[in-house]
Image 1 (spheres, rainbow, N blue to C red):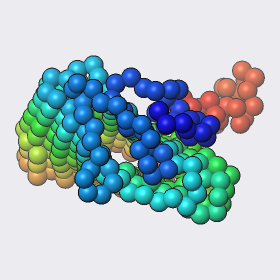
Image 2: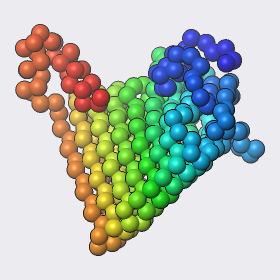
Image 3: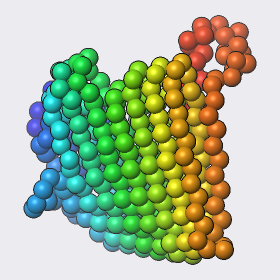
Length: 308
């Protein structure tokens, strides 16, 4: 691996749990450049011939392998858009770890927009983890506007873990998915904002063929004067099942807007939505404080458990 400084190594740990060179296939990007890459017999990574980004091709039958594609930015004022396309063969079972960490100690805004497109073959199973993290004491903003597109063939499964807990000033996450027969999408989003931060999550899931299903759950905490919006739409275009859940804690002067939307275009579509926004219950705080915790410590314990 090309030598990374201490800040970049810390960002890798925060976004991809990497303490060194990962096993399997990987592409590590730092300050707008690919700094290290590894392919395997079953997973190939190539730079795009036009524009910025990579193509990841996973052979039929690939199981128990992983792909890591973290991005770190430690240069103030750097803005980039990267297009990464995943072509997953049939009958695969693979872990994909992405994410971006921005450390901005300057006065200019830093921004990374990752456009990820997944083409998942028949009967394949993908677990996708994407973590966003921001740090640095500069006045420049840390901005992340990711787009994730998922196209799922018959019998495939996609499990998505989308996490943003700290330090990102502005984000607009857009997730689009189209599911064919018996395909299954599971999304678990965890989000916390603080200060003057804003976060918008937009989901549009199209259940296009019989037996397709989606389970999308978002848990979030808005602290200080931060703002969050969840715009979640599930369309049932066949004999399918869809469940969405928005569960949020509001604190201080935070603001949260939940915009759930269900559209049934087939008599056999079964769609359900749950939503709740509220403050931390007083009895929860009192119970923990009787065990010796301060009010602030009790709040942190409740939040950590809620976002776990």
